[in-house]
Every structure is written in structure tokens, then in C-alpha cells.
Image (cartoon, rainbow, N blue to C red):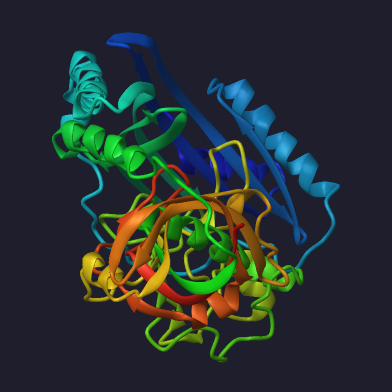
Length: 448
């Protein structure tokens, strides 16, 4: 790396900073979209930049730059100091001070950077073709996408921290449309990994086609209370909502239904919600967070009991606890804030088919609409979302169901989870959230 971060820290202190943090990031991303056997768009982006946090008299200032000549770097440091001088004092705004040890992780595969763009295009084309060839009922592939990224992060601060890591990921997904008479339904599927060899284009294309076909002929059902079985794709969306309410920031600001519930039972005994930044199969895995605090497994709900919240250094200082290693920033352009890493509902030991076969009369939900965009109230926990899926009778799937609403309360939802599958899967389309297939023993279903 051309930047001498230690020299820049010294320079910042000479200019008036007390404590200094430098966050240096380089990244490369590729995005490919194909349509009807042709490449519709191909984008590659390279970025690098430096985020500078300065602390003076319990005040924090921030600036960033992508210009690394000496004058521009000094100007950015002066800007961060000037911003600190006009900031409101806050005794909890500090840098982490630990003498940390970090776990070695296998989160970078050099094969991805060596792969040719033609091979990436071929994956997208194979996925599209597999979906179209799956059935005559598939009349269009609406979009087919491939994406990847490689990122390298280095953090240095005036407490002696100087650490870096490199990571990469790739993924492919598609939306398809199935038709039966006037009825049209869509389906989606995706695969992800750290190299092209881990992607499964044919299986992914066929899965998307099958997901759409299963929803053809959908009807409403009568309003009732019934068991609901969740796919991992829909379950992960509920994890997204729950994770936001389980950050210490949300609790401290009075914006969480989990405020004042620490050490209380908030879920069924078999429910364990875990945030684990070290999970190698996760999508937000790194040896340390965006402040340099080591990532670690954190039990948020253990055996149904709320045992912890997600903390960064700032929120941990407020509560007088240790950071859980959950500081996150979108890029070098922003300051860290508390956020989940790999957040998931721990799997059980049941096959998904056995969960379905144990339902006498219930709903197998494949899609929900509006959940992550306002369908759940993070303070009361009440949620109400549109849903599409299949109806289960006597342990067998009997047909598709649409134009219904499922509603409940998130804590009741957690307390009513009574069966857990063994098929934990992450959902890259909304972040690094995962569940297995699972059953909630009763939810309100509004239909005809």
C-alpha cells in the first residue's frame, strides 16, 4: 500500500488531534445482466479511499478523501479536526483500546480475481437457459444477474492498532415468470460463494422456475388462525427486522420492542438468535469490525432468553459493557455505526419435508411484501404483510395461495416457533441474514 498510515497519524496529532483513526479501503466490483441470451449490461468499478476520524476534547470529527497526494491528505486531516472542534462533546465517543488477537479466516479466494469475464457471463447465460428449458409454463426470464466484489480493508489508530484483511464474494440470481392461462406468477432463486466453482447456475435456474410454477393457480383462503411454515428466504427477512430492533442503538433511543427485556424470556426455548462475524459461510465475515474490534459469536437470544444486544464501541461505552464487534460502515465515506454481521436463527435437526408433513391445516409462505419497508413496527413489534405461498392439508401441499395477509407480533412470533429445519441458508439480496425452514404454530391469516 502506498499510504503510510502511521506517518499520517503522527501528522494528525501534530496538527492538533488527540486520537486518530484511519480506515483505508480498496474495492473492485463487477455486475453483469443478461437478457434473452445477450449481455444487456456489464459494469466494473474500482474504488479506494481513506476515512479519517479525529477526536479532540471528547468531540469527534470526520472527513474522507480519495486523493492521496500529500496536500490533499493534509487538507482532509485539517477538515476532520475542524469538524471535531465544532462538534458537541460526547464522553462516549472514543476509540477501542484493547490489545486484540484476531482469528485467521479463509474469506478470500484468489481464483475469483483470476477468472475471466467470459466465464462470469457464461454462468448468467446458463442460469437463464436452465430456467427457460425447465417447463413450457416458463414464458420469460425477467432478469438474470451476476455480481462479485473484492475488498481490502486496513484500519490504523493512535492506540497502536494496525490491521488489515482481504475478502471476496460472488453471486448469481434471476427472476422468472410462469403463466397458466391468465394467471402469472414470478419466482426467484440465487446462489453465492467465494469462487465461480461454488455457484450452481443450472440448479439455480431450475429452482427459480419451480418457485414460480408452484404458485400458479393461486387462490384466497378464508380468514383464520393457523400454523405457518416459513422458507429460509422469507425467514431471513424477519431476521433483518429483528436485528434492527436488537441493536443497542435502537434500545438506547427507545426504538425497540426489546428495550428493558434483557434476561427475560422473549422466544420459545428452542429459539437461538446468533450474530457471528466469524462464520466463514456467512456473507459479512471478517476478523474484526469497522473499528478494529475482533468479530465474535454473540448469543442474542439463547434458549429463548434475551441475553445481549449488538454493540459498537460508542453504544458499549454508554452501557458500560464491551463491544460485541458490531461496528459497521458502508464504506470509507462514513463513520461506523452498530449493525448486525452474520445474523441468524440457529437451525434444528428436522428435514423441511417433515415439518410440512406435520401440519394438518396451514400456510407455507414463499413470499411476503412490505416487511422490510415498514410492514413491522420496531417499537410495538406488530407486523402485517401481504403473503403468497401454498396451503397444506393433512401434511400435503394442496395448491397455491395468494392475496392474503399474515399478521402478528414479533415476540409472539418468536415464542410460537415450535419446529426448526436443518437447512440454514443466507439471503444475499437483503444482507447477511439466515434461517432454516421453521414453523410458527399460529398466526392470523386474513383472506376472503
